[in-house]
Length: 153
Image (cartoon, rainbow, N blue to C red; front, side, top):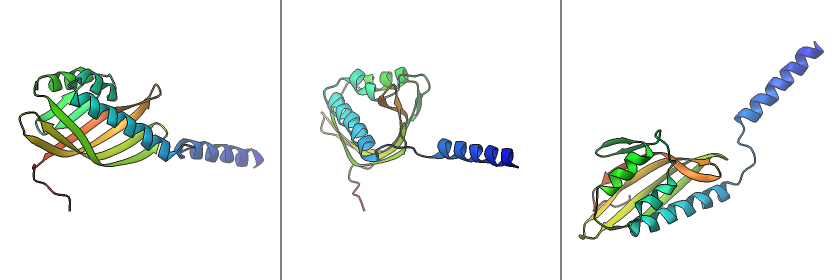
Protein backbone atom coordinates (compact mmCIF):
# COMPACT_ATOMS: atom_id res chain seq x y z
CA UNK A 1 0.00 0.00 0.00
CA UNK A 2 2.79 2.41 0.95
CA UNK A 3 4.65 1.57 -2.28
CA UNK A 4 1.50 2.16 -4.34
CA UNK A 5 0.98 5.54 -2.67
CA UNK A 6 4.59 6.60 -3.37
CA UNK A 7 4.33 5.45 -6.99
CA UNK A 8 1.07 7.36 -7.41
CA UNK A 9 2.65 10.47 -5.85
CA UNK A 10 5.67 10.27 -8.18
CA UNK A 11 3.42 9.85 -11.23
CA UNK A 12 1.24 12.79 -10.18
CA UNK A 13 4.27 15.03 -9.66
CA UNK A 14 5.66 13.99 -13.06
CA UNK A 15 2.38 14.85 -14.76
CA UNK A 16 2.30 18.28 -13.13
CA UNK A 17 5.89 19.03 -14.13
CA UNK A 18 5.23 17.94 -17.72
CA UNK A 19 2.03 19.94 -18.15
CA UNK A 20 2.79 22.98 -16.01
CA UNK A 21 3.94 26.20 -17.56
CA UNK A 22 6.93 26.52 -15.25
CA UNK A 23 8.45 29.78 -14.09
CA UNK A 24 8.78 32.29 -16.87
CA UNK A 25 7.88 35.89 -17.39
CA UNK A 26 5.20 36.49 -20.00
CA UNK A 27 6.27 40.13 -20.10
CA UNK A 28 9.87 39.15 -20.88
CA UNK A 29 8.76 36.71 -23.59
CA UNK A 30 6.53 39.33 -25.20
CA UNK A 31 9.35 41.90 -25.11
CA UNK A 32 11.86 39.50 -26.65
CA UNK A 33 9.48 38.54 -29.46
CA UNK A 34 8.56 42.19 -30.15
CA UNK A 35 12.27 43.02 -30.41
CA UNK A 36 12.66 40.34 -33.11
CA UNK A 37 9.62 41.62 -34.99
CA UNK A 38 10.76 45.25 -34.81
CA UNK A 39 14.16 44.22 -36.19
CA UNK A 40 12.47 42.27 -38.97
CA UNK A 41 10.43 45.34 -39.97
CA UNK A 42 13.64 47.40 -40.13
CA UNK A 43 15.44 44.71 -42.15
CA UNK A 44 12.56 44.32 -44.61
CA UNK A 45 12.30 48.07 -45.05
CA UNK A 46 15.96 48.26 -46.07
CA UNK A 47 15.53 45.38 -48.54
CA UNK A 48 17.70 43.03 -46.47
CA UNK A 49 15.61 39.86 -46.78
CA UNK A 50 18.40 37.61 -45.46
CA UNK A 51 18.46 39.64 -42.24
CA UNK A 52 14.64 39.60 -42.14
CA UNK A 53 14.77 35.80 -42.34
CA UNK A 54 16.84 35.61 -39.15
CA UNK A 55 13.43 35.74 -37.46
CA UNK A 56 12.57 32.35 -39.01
CA UNK A 57 13.98 28.97 -38.03
CA UNK A 58 16.50 27.96 -40.69
CA UNK A 59 14.91 24.63 -41.44
CA UNK A 60 13.33 22.78 -44.33
CA UNK A 61 10.36 22.14 -42.02
CA UNK A 62 9.05 25.69 -41.64
CA UNK A 63 5.81 26.46 -43.43
CA UNK A 64 4.53 29.77 -44.77
CA UNK A 65 0.86 29.76 -45.78
CA UNK A 66 -0.10 32.80 -47.86
CA UNK A 67 -2.80 33.82 -50.37
CA UNK A 68 -0.92 32.19 -53.28
CA UNK A 69 -0.38 28.86 -51.54
CA UNK A 70 2.10 27.24 -49.19
CA UNK A 71 5.86 27.67 -49.23
CA UNK A 72 7.93 25.17 -47.29
CA UNK A 73 11.41 25.56 -45.96
CA UNK A 74 13.52 28.55 -44.95
CA UNK A 75 15.23 28.81 -48.33
CA UNK A 76 11.91 28.61 -50.19
CA UNK A 77 10.51 31.49 -48.16
CA UNK A 78 13.64 33.59 -48.74
CA UNK A 79 13.57 32.85 -52.47
CA UNK A 80 9.91 33.91 -52.66
CA UNK A 81 10.68 37.22 -50.95
CA UNK A 82 13.63 37.86 -53.26
CA UNK A 83 11.47 37.37 -56.36
CA UNK A 84 9.72 40.64 -55.57
CA UNK A 85 12.29 43.32 -56.36
CA UNK A 86 10.11 46.28 -55.32
CA UNK A 87 11.33 48.04 -52.22
CA UNK A 88 8.75 48.50 -49.49
CA UNK A 89 8.38 49.65 -45.92
CA UNK A 90 6.96 47.10 -43.47
CA UNK A 91 5.10 47.90 -40.27
CA UNK A 92 3.25 45.71 -37.82
CA UNK A 93 0.22 46.65 -35.73
CA UNK A 94 -2.33 45.06 -33.42
CA UNK A 95 0.25 42.57 -32.18
CA UNK A 96 -1.08 40.04 -29.69
CA UNK A 97 1.48 37.63 -28.26
CA UNK A 98 0.27 34.63 -26.29
CA UNK A 99 3.08 32.72 -24.57
CA UNK A 100 2.34 29.00 -24.57
CA UNK A 101 5.40 27.94 -22.59
CA UNK A 102 8.89 29.30 -21.90
CA UNK A 103 9.86 28.10 -25.40
CA UNK A 104 6.76 28.74 -27.54
CA UNK A 105 4.29 31.51 -28.29
CA UNK A 106 1.51 32.36 -30.69
CA UNK A 107 1.72 35.77 -32.36
CA UNK A 108 -1.24 37.39 -34.10
CA UNK A 109 -1.15 40.75 -35.82
CA UNK A 110 -1.55 42.88 -38.87
CA UNK A 111 1.09 43.80 -41.41
CA UNK A 112 1.24 46.99 -43.46
CA UNK A 113 3.46 47.00 -46.52
CA UNK A 114 3.97 50.35 -48.21
CA UNK A 115 5.45 49.59 -51.63
CA UNK A 116 7.64 52.09 -53.52
CA UNK A 117 5.18 52.29 -56.43
CA UNK A 118 2.61 53.78 -54.01
CA UNK A 119 0.67 50.55 -53.59
CA UNK A 120 -0.32 49.45 -50.13
CA UNK A 121 -0.79 45.87 -48.98
CA UNK A 122 -2.17 44.86 -45.63
CA UNK A 123 -3.22 41.65 -44.02
CA UNK A 124 -3.31 39.48 -40.95
CA UNK A 125 -0.79 36.94 -39.77
CA UNK A 126 -0.46 34.23 -37.17
CA UNK A 127 2.98 32.97 -36.24
CA UNK A 128 4.00 30.03 -34.14
CA UNK A 129 7.36 30.99 -32.67
CA UNK A 130 9.74 28.83 -30.69
CA UNK A 131 12.80 29.69 -28.66
CA UNK A 132 15.56 27.78 -30.44
CA UNK A 133 19.14 28.02 -29.20
CA UNK A 134 18.11 31.02 -27.08
CA UNK A 135 16.48 32.97 -29.94
CA UNK A 136 12.84 33.37 -30.93
CA UNK A 137 12.19 31.97 -34.40
CA UNK A 138 9.02 31.58 -36.45
CA UNK A 139 8.38 27.95 -37.38
CA UNK A 140 4.96 28.51 -38.94
CA UNK A 141 3.58 31.65 -40.61
CA UNK A 142 0.03 31.96 -41.89
CA UNK A 143 -0.61 35.30 -43.58
CA UNK A 144 -3.68 36.51 -45.43
CA UNK A 145 -4.36 39.67 -47.39
CA UNK A 146 -6.99 42.24 -46.49
CA UNK A 147 -8.48 44.90 -48.76
CA UNK A 148 -6.30 48.04 -48.60
CA UNK A 149 -9.24 50.04 -47.25
CA UNK A 150 -10.04 47.55 -44.47
CA UNK A 151 -10.80 49.21 -41.11
CA UNK A 152 -10.75 47.47 -37.74
CA UNK A 153 -14.19 47.12 -36.18
